[in-house]
Image (cartoon, rainbow, N blue to C red; front, side, top):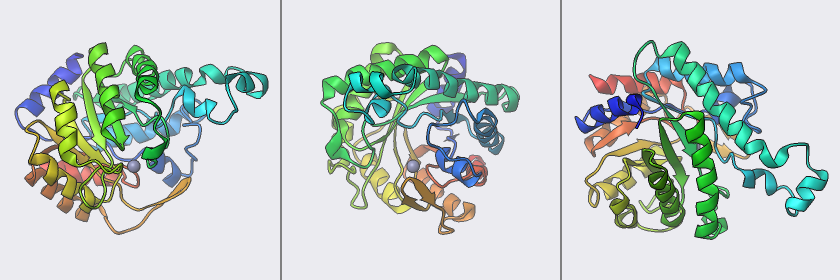
Length: 305
Ligand SMILES: [Zn+2]
């Protein structure tokens, strides 16, 4: 465990509230930079500035810009590996590992620039191997284990403080990703997309999360990338079956593939009011997903008083 994470864990153990950052991909869009390709190499200043703005807004944990950044994401554009090698750009097969390293570097640079001695942890984001809103596409679990291991190792080698397994849609893939983090000896938070009825997007009840993941002692269980009321409902379900730390970081707006439609439904003040409900339900980690901005996180910092 890194000294930074140890400090944040002590705060969490005391029941204090930790702030996560807000959206990264959508914040790039808002600032006029498309997020495809993650832009960690081509637009380093834009990525670094977003991380730094979240730190300045009060985030205790910033997440790497590594949403679905895997070897598979590149390979999925081709018939198979031979086809990728035949017609794909030079180095494409290994590009994911290069970009993972670069993404962590941007977060570390932002921390060095903006944290001013405050403990700010870097969470390496690990997402579903296939599209996060399509549980039906999930690969076989042993295949998923090998691929998540590759990502987790790359993020750890680049210097993250914890792994954030996020935007998971079903218990099975989340469990193998958590097992990989445990095997590699890195703290791990696990976050799920939930539905309006309080179940996971893939249909499993929240009680199944506690039953399957509880024995592995995830450091925090969270919900993300669903509208605030859906997350509130899922948190209520989780509280009934899980006594450990919980968290929430819903999205704001509407998905407009491959972009994001920003709406004014949850301006920072209203988002803060929702967050007070999550805290009342027991959440100790709060932040934002797609469509949230540094201003949303700045509003959440008032939860600490
Ligand atoms: Zn999201």
